[in-house]
Image (cartoon, rainbow, N blue to C red; front, side, top):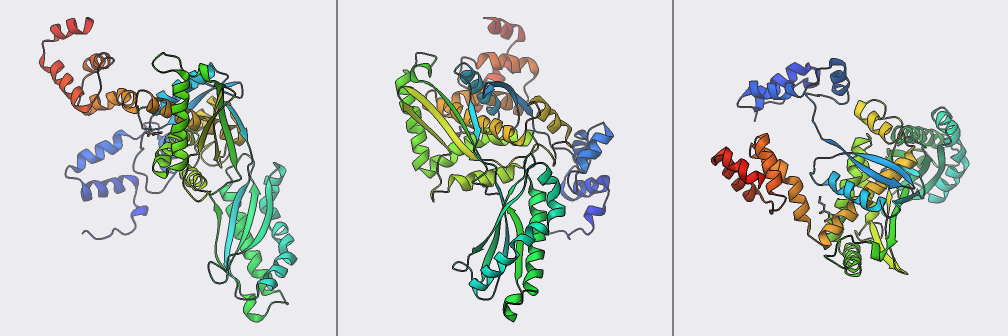
Length: 450
Ligand code: MEV
């Protein structure tokens, strides 16, 4: 094993690339050229991207696609999606068009409360701690005025602070459990700054609290950090229509389709192995919009899956029912999002996506993101319960296979046409490409035109 490199972050970008290329690559020059091919020729744009993180060596592309024809609460949207999986955008666009003809999606923000905690150890009488907390509670609000005044001016701020006793699980362990309203910002920096201030106030006030015994004065703060579990920052998305309007072709009756669809959702409600994949399909839509709008997809993922387990078993996020002949499909998801701060004004493409969405507020973005998730789930379940997922999926994956096999543009065009009527698989594409490459072009042209 080679020696650890010292001072790597202090090297220039060129030096870092040089080191990596020589250390790990059989052909260092090729590695350098590859990385540089992804640099933007606009130097200031490249510098902006370089400075997002430490040790940037190049840019890592993801396609930015759009799914048009979404109708949400009677407003039209074209939704931006940054995602690598071939079928995601097409599925969203298909579901959007389908539901636009049936009244569109309805979405409602249920609540927007964010959470943060100061985790600390207190070695003493819990009643004394409660008395102390009640006597100093106001000081947490007063002592963080400098941090909260701008947020308060926007209608947000600290909502409440509670003392929670966790000593049955960990000896001497307590929390300050604080709730926040952060309006259009995701609020991570605001919440973490407030929490660190609370922890300072907590320690100082405890030292000066005369009613505490000596052993009670030394509160040990373990950490102060927001929670990405936001079960009270929730949005609901929904679609509904008469059962007989649910199917456009005659391959399956509306009643049979609805029964199968509802059973598929029911399976995801009770069976964790299915629920994880079902929810993964929802996250295909959610993450793609989260990334495109510069939000934190890791935070959203962690929070959503915790929410899916809130009743002690991992379960479906979405639900479906038929009542009085009306099919309803809905989902409630926790989404802590921002439309100001972070990357929203920094990353030019993120800015573009916000403008394309009409510069939504955080609440409106919660609705858009939840709808993208529900649309994705609807598209997946519709395929799974009718044609199966592979037909559409492999059609979309065809271009990746053709690119992997090095097909030229003419052959790609021919393959797309050929596989409109034939099942796509890696070997079928390879065989067809071989046929194209080894057959007289004039003969192929004839075949192609037939
Ligand atoms: C694939 O990315 C997502 C699906 O597996 C979701 C599902 O099974 O519901 C198709």
